[in-house]
Image (cartoon, rainbow, N blue to C red):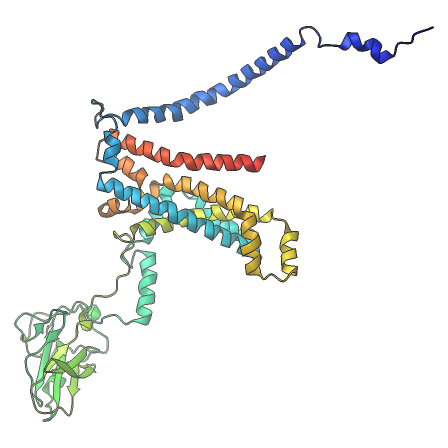
Length: 457
């Protein structure tokens, strides 16, 4: 009987195992590839170690020594961080930045990204909002330092605020006017001026000084004719005038020919401390209260006549300096948030949005219940990225905040620099602040990296 052997079974013994030396060859190839990869990565690793790892380790070690580095004090600098009131203020301001700035930026970026989709010139609008990213923080700080100037003639924001204020509320006509001491006008605690007693039928002369020629209205007329007119028995007359004659001539307390009245001045007739009449001076400075009963009256110039003009808002004062700097930060980074969220928005499945609209959902419901949940991953990445960036903010705070309010605006980064090099000369405490800042940034960085890897898998 003939036995037939199949080709597969006959070839079996020859292919039972790997070729001699195959495993070791593959291992050598892998080691060679790793060595080549390490060789190419070595310059980057050396640079990373020199610029990142070494400064971190040095700062950790330096934070354990005193100001000049001659004495080991352990955790003393870290204890001082939470004792120093200025450093605590920096921690408080950094907390405000972390809570407010990323939240506002993410919200603004989301709203603008959704709205830009419905704009015809969407690309141009995105470019316009993204342009501030091309401006350095130094230049942006200088721009906003000028914009926040309190003088309305220099600061554009206060110029706008003053313009709106003056459109709804009249400013004082004579803010610099005042009465001479001992000339019959008594100044009240509120800034008003009051005459002595004047009976009906009498005339009150209210002479003021300190009014610049530019503040005298063009319609002002000589006050002498008004001062010369007699009053009726039941009338109290008077004139408010500029008690100054060009060239130094004229008599104090008396209306001279060259002296003009002050029109538009509010005047009140007072009796027993209460106002019984109010009027406004005419072009020649004259005023009149008629049909007054018997008794004694005083004439009062209210403080509103001398109120200083509204000069705007103190943007860089202790109260508003941090919100003002955050506003500058929003101007720079809003375009970044909008572009990133807009990229995520463009990748959303349109059929899901259209299905929701066909089911009767309005635009607000689509936005709140579909768009935002689908954009949650990209919103989280944008928010965390901005948190990391905010923790390191330095340029804007240092440049925009004036010297007197630097402590009120300081954050951890600026405080670290001020303590180390800006006059404090305490590198130990500055290193402790740097380590604290690193510890605060690391969790956000780790979260962002893990989120990014998860999205790529």
